[in-house]
Image 1 (cartoon, chains in turn orange, green):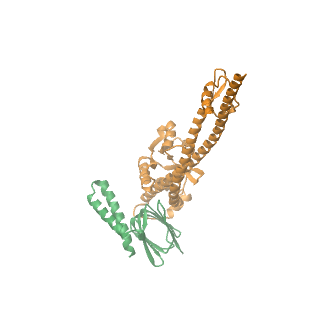
Image 2 (cartoon, one colour):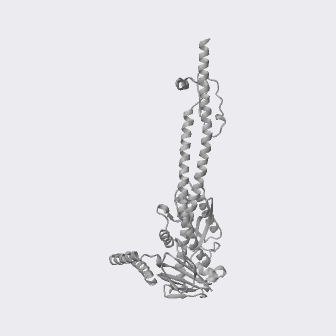
Image 3 (cartoon, chains in turn cyan, brown):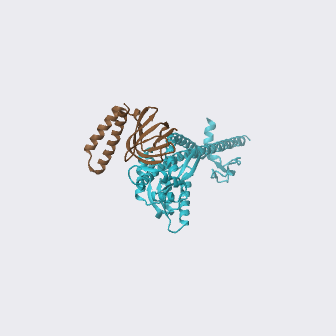
Length: 327
Length: 133
């Protein structure tokens, strides 16, 4: 209607006659300035800019909400698998013990991380712990060495920067196909073949609940170290009380056992990390969409104020124009 | 004196309850386990496990792993396991035939080894079905 046409025209004439519209926009620290100063030093706020911003924030909100739901459904699928695999490594710990304090020369730290980002802080915590283990081991003696085996893009990006010479093996794109035991046992085999080790420390995020992920280290000792510890007594001392069946020598059986233990622990660790990744992504996307919602509310208020200000401006122009004509 | 048996695979827990006796086939020989057995750590080959509950025998096909026996607790960790009653006889026989055909066709060391392995697994499954009846 006429008002709308005038409003459109008014945008061109506004700088000529208008008192300063009352807005609180300038005081808000969140936005870059939405106004430009006209030739007479008057503020001219564009609703177009605010509207564009609102559209993009709304899109972000929709996308993050969808990502949260996708992560939730993936989490459900993986969670059952993880719980089923938990029972597998417990007998090993009961038989061979989990000795993080074993004193060994060659440590290998297997860091498990995700390939994709937007999953909160879980990858940084894993990397921090791996670096901490490295430092701990190098601090206790000069002949101790620590090597890395990295699973996942995110840890690779962070560790390649400062520990490039210590990295033995990098494996990415683990989750292209759904995780299963055969794939992980092949992986474990590769690692065992290519890396010399006395103790393998697997660093991953254990999935306690949808909001809590605990970084954990599982230790798998090589058979020679197991023998050594068994002789010195303690938890592993009971190992000798077991009579060994299976035809071959005790050493060979221990070797097989250690390999099996490694692949079972790896399987569990990879599953738990995948669960934690999905859970962390869920909560990150959730807070992101909530922030987007808040931002949208604030922008709507700004938009309304801007709109009312420009209407007031035009009204004033028209009225002053009309009164000038009259008299 | 009850014997508790626990069979675990990477994908799920297959069995977790009491039994009277089991017959396990390890890499060297078959051993029978009653309650109050001496502690043993054994490697298990691809073969069948027979379980007795109160005069009734059950069979399971195991695909290799480890067993730990102590204090009337048997823990068996295997790569895969199937209850004899869960295996479809038709399908198992077919799998056996396919495995035998593959073994004849196999060329090269790796394929032969894989074909052999598949054959043993298929044979175990067929045995598991036959052993019940």
